[in-house]
Amino acid sequence: MGDATNGYDYDMIVIGTGPAGQRAAVQAAKLEKRVAVIERKSVVGGVCINTGTIPSKTLREAVLHLSGFSQRGLYGASYTVKEKITINDLMFRTDNVVRNEIDVIRHQLVRNNIDVISAEASFVDSHTLRLKYIDEHGHRDVTTANTVIATGTTVTRDDGIPFNDRDIFTSDEILHLDRIPRTLTVIGAGVIGCEYATIFAALGVRVTLVDKRARLLSFVDAEIIEELIHHMRQNRITLRLGEEVSGIETVAHDNGGERVKIHLGSGKQIITEKALYSIGRTGATSALNLPAAGLDVDDRGRLRVNKQFQTEISHIYAVGDVIGFPSLASTSMEQGRLATCHAFGVETRVIPELFPYGVYTIPEISIVGRNEEELTNAGVPYEVGKANYREIARGQIIGDQTGLLKLIFHLETRKLLGVHIIGTGASELIHIGQAVLAFGGTVDYFVDTVFNYPTLAESYKTAAFDGLNRMR
Image (cartoon, rainbow, N blue to C red; front, side, top):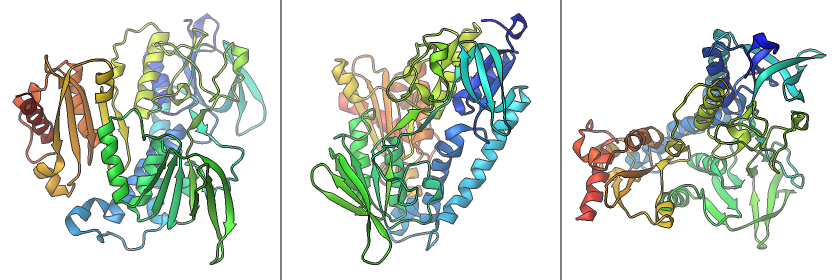
């Protein structure tokens, strides 16, 4: 744990400026340590800001607004805000948000006296990094007491697939589509695949979703997933679960141009205008020369860490997507902060089982705590309480007739164990349940609390009454 005065150039070097790297670097700066962040891209923010979280969520918001999707419960299935929505309409909003976020991050780093270096970093040894400059030739070596690897991930590509970034592409290229297709096949039903499948379906695109697993998003409560699948089918998404892709090719179309033909192992074929390949992500570690630091990675390029986010080399930490699940911006930020605190001996308190998850499908999903399957397998006696948005005045006002909030609580102690929501505002609403879980509250809290009326938050009270009534 040295500092810059005992022979190292820096107390800490952070590689990568995504959410995990930003938070690690800022925390070190707040502790008055000498810190640098290394970024090999021309812009800060990492995948989160530039191609991932922020663009996809902004795209989702633009789609919900322009398509009038969220108002169709009130005005009918044909309702739309803009008749012919183009890619430019969607990108207008996205580009503005991305530009602003990049500026905010760069300003935050500079304001905290963090050295921001545009270079590609690789290890010379466990305390020395070689910085190969991006804008100019040459390199220099710098030494550091501690290193945080926050390089994130790159999209996983299969060598056998003829990507052309136009008709067959990954989530990285989705922001550069030439047009909104009439048909789209999404290969891979992870979080990213499900999000884009539902976003494009809201635009009226006929979407097919293919995955070799039999169940969507296994970390989400089964009942919530059933609701999601029901919504998907209502929006004309065809699900091909338990199906493996055996080949992809482009073929000439009768009307001129090309189509994508997807062959499934079962013998089925899918003809589609465009195909989004979304089979996970790979740790962006190949350029780091990890063996020089005494480190290696798994088959997906990810680093193994302990509970303090230390790698096998105790002064080298790894945080964010590069260590795998849950790969969420929110958890990555917290990992970055915790790693830095540990490196400099600062006490922290964290409750990882209370990290919330947000899945920005349409409708969105958010969960915190334990689900029914986990509790059943652990032999924990529980009861559930549910509230449908259609029973809540606010649900009627906003036109969401299908949302669902579900509480799970202990049968004997009535202690809250988990909250699972699908519907408008799920990722905001979840924090009420998260707070009650954090202070060990019971389901009675929601019965005794007065909520603003009319709000979706009232769902907590309705669900609590429902659960307690089941016990009677």
